[in-house]
Each structure stands twice: as C-alpha cells, then as structure tokens.
Image (cartoon, rainbow, N blue to C red; front, side, top):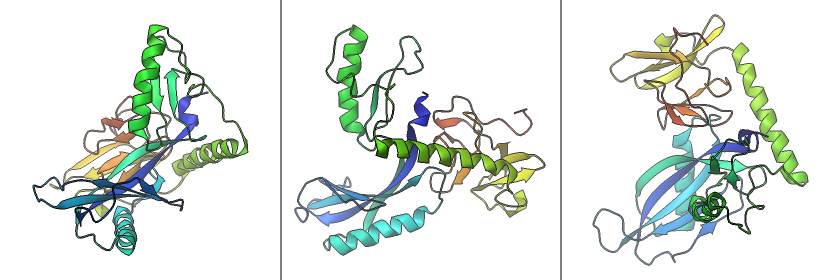
Length: 276
C-alpha cells in the first residue's frame, strides 16, 4: 500500500512572543483541543537582548491546501497565549510549516514499502521530527548494515492500519482525497486573471483545463497547469508561504517556476502550453 495513502499533510502555525527570562518554566506544553496548541520555550530572543526569552506557541493546524487564512490563525494563537501567559510581550516571530500525520499516530521508518532496492524512508513524524530523526538514524543504520533492531517491526512502513480508530482515520483521509478530484468540474477561484492582485495567485478555468496563475509584484503573469504532477489533484494558492499547495498529498510548488518545493511530487508543474 502506497505510503501517501497512510498519512496526510497538515500545515501548522507558530508564533514567537517575547517573555521575561524565568517568567515561564522551561517545559513542553500542549493541550488536547481540536485544533490543539503546543508551547516551547527558547532562551534568549536571538537579537542580543539580555533577560528575554521567546515563548513559541504553535497549532491551529489544518490539512494542507484546505484553508488560506493564516492571519486569522496567527491572531487566534496570540489571543490564546495572552489569555494564559500574561507576561508575554510582542510577537517577534511567526511562521508555518508542514507535518505529516500518520493514520495510526506512529511514524514510518524502514525499507521502502514499494520495495525499491536500497531505498529507506522516514516519514509520518506528526511534529515529532527530532525524536523520529534520532530513531531513524539508529534504526536505518541497523537495517542498512543487516543488523537486527527491536524497533523494526514497530515502525515498519508496510504495516496496515490496525484498530477501529486507525481504520476510520484511513478511510476519512482517503475519502477526502477522492472528493478533491471533483474540483476538475468546478469553477476556478476567479473568472479571469484580471482579478488576481499583485503578489497573489488563483486557479482560473479555461475550457476543460485548470490553470494556476500567479501575478508577481511587477505585474507579470506566470501560468502553469493546476494539476499536481503527483496524482493530478488541483493545487490551491497559499498566500502565507507564496506557493501552490496540493490538498491531496501535500506537494508544494514555486509560484513563478512551478518547481517542486515539497514532495511527493517529483516533477514541476507543467507550463500552460504543455500537454497534461
């Protein structure tokens, strides 16, 4: 079973707010809300100001390509933080990232499930990249050298979803992917490229084709097929990261050149003139 059917891409948002040194105990914090939030503490603000730490607060996750409202999500994170950590000051940093969520909440580390020779994978980190990266370094080294490892079966990428919760998650995520293909028969984001502002992008329908149109800050248009080169879903505009994002499996593309920024796609978006 292909690895992209067993995990889903999600965007997560983070803000860094200044806080007096020692005002917040150094620990790992998170809640169980939906969407959930997580909190970390970074000593020093990185700008040479003594006596100041940075409280990193993240969350407000959504499936990649399913929303384009970063400003509202950052604002909700700030409001949530100020309500619970009264010593915080300004928002000094903010960014978003992409995480892969496995259907059974455990990473995939091991031999390629497609059985490609000498190929090993480590994915499905669910935001635990440091932990999984350490495990992967140990586990994959043993596999490559032909040594046994007690974690091999636990993280085996070929495993199937076991249990009702995991099975339902598998069905839910893959049904969501299936519904995205209906966008091929729906209208575009706008009726014409004339409606696209400077530094923005939108999908425009031209007959049977869907075109990803980006207008750069000089007013120049960059047009590519809106079909993701992985499995053909229609890409969506991400105004926060300035990229085309696939809502099915998380591939991301440069708005000007169409080049791949994030797999599983391996090839760039086709120019509008190229055949699909």
